[in-house]
Length: 177
Image (cartoon, rainbow, N blue to C red; front, side, top):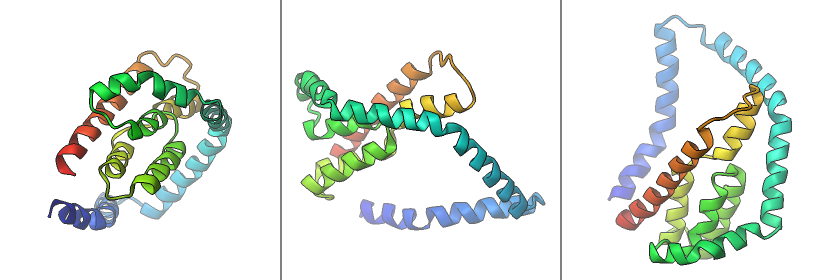
């Protein structure tokens, strides 16, 4: 029953939000099309500025995965995760998600193809995907595009938020699924 309710809400959420934003803008007498095209133009310029940072991040992720460093890291912490009753199959997702959304999507697809979309592991990685952020990507691309060099507490706070999201995703998935 819960899943059917969530599916019904999710089916109409994006159209409702889109119509709500446009409706609100029209009540404020905003020229919606002109503002939209101006934002798209700025978005294009931003995309061109972040390409070097994006390429560097993608190369670093490729090296991390191809070198086997991810596998070594997972093996090293598996005794701790076993004590916490965290499924070992979800660990690649837990490590890839802070690095790259695309890489995490690939890992999630792999896990779901192996275990099935309706399995606890499949649903857990899907919840993980939605409950965390690509912290290193954000730092590299967004901070780099506006020339912020000293990120101060952004990395530790972002990683703590990712950890909280991952642990919550595992806990909530065990309760609901």
